[in-house]
Image: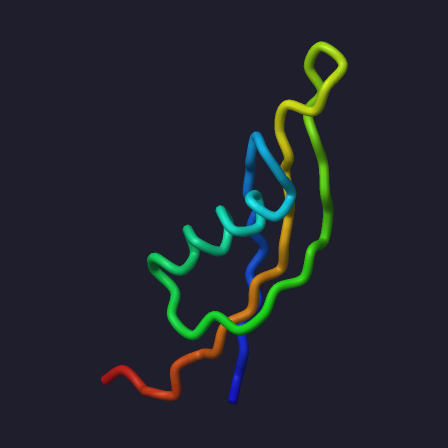
Amino acid sequence: MVEKTIELTGTSTSSIEEAVNVAIGRAAVTIQNLRRFRVKEIRGVVENGVVSQWHVTIDLSFVVSERVHE
């Protein structure tokens, strides 16, 4: 088995978890066999003294298909 890892950033106005799910959900539209993720960085935007956005950067791994294209 071979895995490939890509870096993605998800954004949410409500939570860190939702930002992670946004990134993974978008990847799942075009990538099959998603396996695991690792949070690399958490950032936020502050407006008027409160957090208005969460930005979460993740490494997302997936299994590379064993099929060989001809």
